Length: 317
Ligand code: GDP
Image (cartoon, rainbow, N blue to C red; front, side):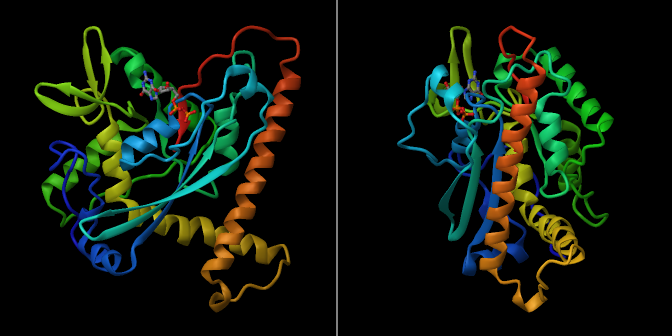
């Protein structure tokens, strides 16, 4: 096994640089030739900051033509899953990133009086199918104390409901100390409290991605301001493991379930890429139906309740 590259988040080499060219060497060589594919589903209610986060993570504009709908429009809208693919290249390594956004998730739902918030239900429904990485959005709207409290609450809820989230593998004993320390730090920071922005702002003589406030600038790529770089480091450094867990655990479970249910016999050689993509699409459609069903149920449960819907900060990538 090749050695992993140590931390990127303490000192990003070049601003405006994602870092996937630093994938472990073994993967790097393959990726230069073939490109690297990665599918990311970003789930959370509209306005939570999902597309801004993706734009910040991958330095790309995912929806250049996007028109942000008004509140009334959002309420009318049913949940739809949008997939969009971008190909980014860095130092000769291609990364094809498919981001599946669910813009209507949680809209028109008053979570205050529910039995269980939609996030918990949704995570339970998908935890055997995908790697869940919980993220707290708009960390700049929370104080440090509030962030710690919310992190703890989310971890408690995850445990209480038996939700399986993605676990970073422990660093191998022969890895270098920097990498071990990085892994420890990443593990301790979950769920990541992140800030996203589409704006470059002048701070300390440099142009940085950030959010401007009367009292100063919140820098997206500053590890002292939020966990954004930790999230990106985790996604990049562990992209291969994320893929392997999806393939070896989630996809294999799905496949053996299908075989058990007496579905069409799928021989290994037959499971080509197209088939996998078709299965994924069908799975996404099922998730879409499931969200719509959960929304309808929750709305029924809340018919007697009233009040503004509260922002759900805990959502997952
Ligand atoms: P989406 O509907 O979940 O994709 O949300 P958007 O990315 O379109 O963001 C919705 C609004 O929240 C926009 O006005 C963004 O500028 C703002 N926003 C996004 N990320 C952040 C953040 O980290 N902090 C703050 N304060 N606002 C954010």
